[in-house]
Image (cartoon, rainbow, N blue to C red):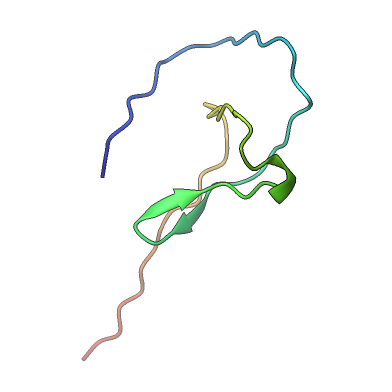
Length: 65
C-alpha cells in the first residue's frame, strides 16, 4: 500500500467550492474510507484531518481458547 505523507498546516483557503461535508472515516478492509454521495463521483475533493477531532480506538477482543 502506498503511504501518503500529510503536509502539516493550520489553515487552508479554497476558492470555487460547491459546499462541504463532515463525516467520519470508517474501516474498509485493510484501509479506510469516507462516504460521500454518489453524485460527486469524478469530482476533485480535499480531505481535511482535524487535530482536535475525536478518535475511536480499535479494540480487539480475543476469546480465550
